[in-house]
Image 1 (cartoon, one colour):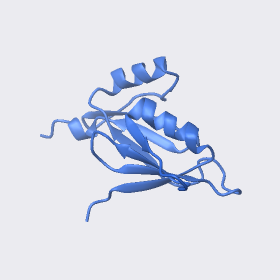
Image 2 (cartoon, helix red, strand yellow; image 1 turned 135 degrees about the vertical axis):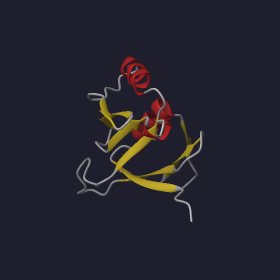
Image 3 (cartoon, helix red, strand yellow; image 1 turned 90 degrees about the horizontal axis):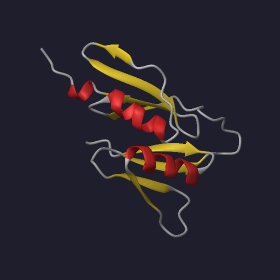
Length: 120
């Protein structure tokens, strides 16, 4: 059974939708009367469902990190920096690179070339 959707709680659903559309190529799908915005993964993979955060929920409170497969982590991070998204240091581990950042709701996100590493 495939995992197709992840729910993210967002203090500002519209700002968060724009963030994932701009930097990761998602396409927002909004239905009249629905408070959830579904972000469709246009390149394949799981969709993100943005749900309004409850009143007492703190930013980044959920224990989740979204990891996006990126073949060239360094180039991706440079391109994002030009658009206002700053990633932390690039980490090297076991044949791949990764870097971490936060979305507008302080959820942890990462880009990683692990899926593209050469095994063996």
